Image (tube, rainbow, N blue to C red; front, top):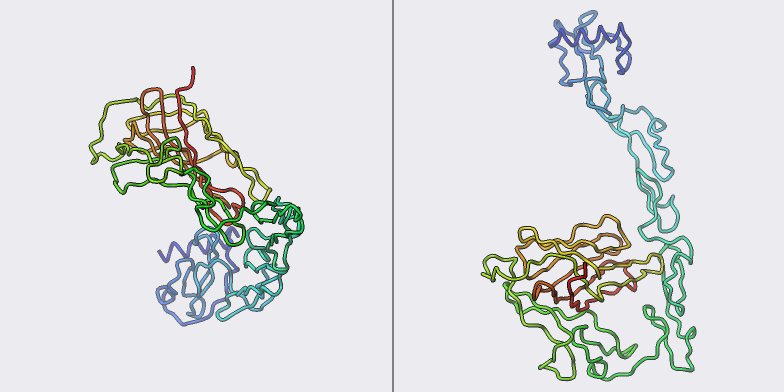
Length: 384
């Protein structure tokens, strides 16, 4: 090995083809043979040279791509420094210094950046995600709010009642624009008669307010699937229309022993009502359309295709891993600053009829007025 390495040094010297630094003059520890000079670094050619003094020739080609060979350190990402000026990274917000052992240090200094920005050692001054530069960046499309970009580059949207028709009793809501409060004493004063969309609330500030989330039916039985059917009579509260439907056996769980005969769960179906849109902060419109979709049952796995979502052209697949038929619980999530989750839950009651719910859930700090929703979808087989 030593003879090979010595030969490599000779070849490099003759051909000037190696990219390491110039061969150093003999010097260092005394030696009798090359073995006395082994420095433990694979990228140096260690030899006993003139006057029986060791030399360590650096060969970059013996390092992995992107690394250089340095005597005393081996393969490193950058050569040792001797002064601060050799460590200049061209990033204005870092303090560059040559530290102990000839290692460059790059210390971020946030004070050198603008308001709300932080110093990144690779990118320089960067603004936080969602940061604004002007008031226009904070427009929430609510006419009665004052939209401002603060010194720390964060948006604020202040509701101002005076921008509404106060003579008519209107007030401003940061999420609902001008409205006439509906006074209430209890939640019972606010109910709209629909059970499935959730229980409306009575708030001290605005009076009646929408439900925070639609009803989720769950009988705590792992072997059943439930849905909220807005057409059913509510026996527990006659003032409300809608109730949880009779649970269906969850055929995606083999241990439940569900019937294996019935609809094929295949084909193109029409799901009226499974579409909509919203515009977070008025900047981007998210639109979805699941009204004309195709179910494909392959060995119990039911995939759903034919739907569209405007926020992406490469959405994750939507499928129920099965074996599910005649029941289906398929969903897909599109990640982003406002995560979108679309879900179809229901049952094929026969070969040409599907009964279920379609829901879309928005999660994240930047969803703004994109509120989660759930609608019944009485599906029927589409005409050829």
